[in-house]
View (tube, rainbow, N blue to C red):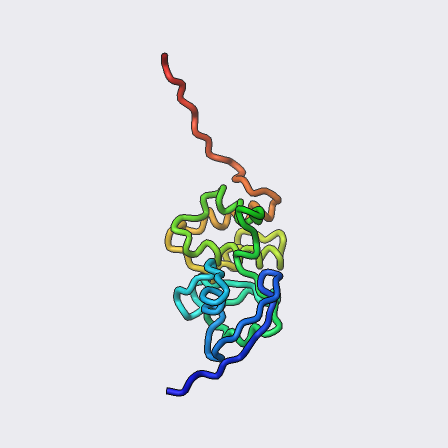
Length: 175
């Protein structure tokens, strides 16, 4: 079996320049995860149907499982890791997903947040129907989508907390 041709590519990853040598047949999702430790970008369906591998490349939301890594030459790529972190401060969408309970198993969450950010960059005030349409390429088997949609809509409204937060009454001890 002949060895695959390799090529060195350079691009911006979350604002930082990177250079990596890859086989020309390797997909971007694999390079991001295995070579560049961007573990938030998940491999799942390998068909561009689930959204788990969603990243933003040159301003466009893409399925990185469908894009050969060599196509990233000279591009600017943003992953979930480029949005925010606990150490450096979370992005409003990350805060909103957490406060709205828009995560369960968490597998789809990075792709959902990246898709939500791409939507808000394109349309800062999307309707609920526009959010639903935008998320059609992202599958979630746990949440039922309502809280995800609420979390994205909240950020569009300039908040990260639910409009009607759940409160738990305190119980006073007798004593």
